[in-house]
Amino acid sequence: MRALIASSDASITKRIQGMLQGRGWQCEWAHSSNADELEGVLCRGDFEMVVVVLSAKPSKANVEKLRDHICGKMVVVGPADPKIILGVLHHCGAEEYVNVDDLEAEFESVLRRSQRVERGKVIAVISPSGGGGSTTLAVNLATVLAAKAARCGLIDLNLSAGDAAAMLDLKPDHSLADFARNVPRMDLSLFSQLLSSHSSGIELLAAPLDFEDIPDVTGDAVRTAIIMARDQFPYVVVDVDQSCSSEQIEALKLADVILLVFQLDFHSLRNVRRVVGYFTRCGIAKTLIRLVVNRYGQTAEISPAQVETALNMKIDFYLPEDAKDINRAENTGVPVVVDRPRTKISRCISELAAEVNGVT
Image 1 (cartoon, rainbow, N blue to C red):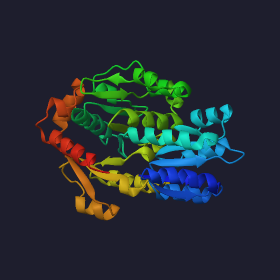
Image 2 (cartoon, rainbow, N blue to C red; image 1 turned 135 degrees about the vertical axis):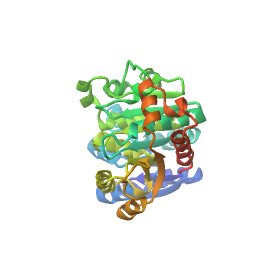
Image 3 (cartoon, rainbow, N blue to C red; image 1 turned 60 degrees about the vertical axis):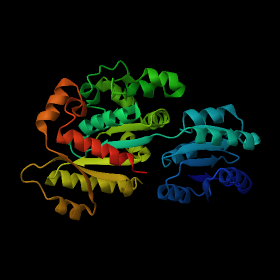
Image 4 (cartoon, rainbow, N blue to C red; image 1 turned 45 degrees about the vertical axis):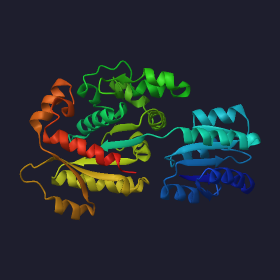
């Protein structure tokens, strides 16, 4: 496990470093007063924990900006000032706050909680082109993973379409917009009430139910929802839409693996190149991306070899063309891996789930 300490106080840093190393953590230290250096370190490394030591005059804006670059758990160390604590926990996205005057005792408690809770794997599914099949894959992948682990979280970030509920024949009473409006008072009990349960073991946080609710979904809300979900479920599948807006990027930054779903045609290939380039500029590591060819086997496709050469990336998975079984499943609200488990498409999705589960 890797941790980064963002601090300008050498004494406090050494105390924190000693506690982390005593529990087997690898530690790096970045000077918190040098924002460029700190952001550079965060973009280069995948840290399970980032410890931010506040200066004598802490800036909420600096902590909030830092949160945008952190994929792991954020722990803030600072004075026992209720206003600062409230601001850091509820507005800046930190998971833990440690009183610097009781550093050893409180930080040891944080470490014990961190070791007790095994973080679930976050799998983001996105297609760079409309109709690429990302929602179909997300729903069926979640179904397979739920069968494996008894439970799987599914977050529908396809905000305008919101088809995941229909594909599972669910009629949600609550949505991600309700979560976003209640972030300041969100706890596990309220979070659970906002989920829609499916017989497969999927717990769905649905897309907004009405178009006018979409603006309520912010990047902060998405980040908080995914963090809470990965603490509750062994797997969290996030259906990300093609807009690559700020809330979608927040989801991708928290992903352990990104399934980029496309078809073997010129327009899809062009959009894959654009999306991969944009991900890189946003600080999302290319190594997280797995290329998934959907509807493989259609006539007049671009050859996989040409695609791999053009992208300088390997195609990882192929999902065969099976419009008949997919359409039947979506029209009945039963995932194809349940409705037609012996078909080639179902077997391929199950194999994909097994391989993604092995990605670390």
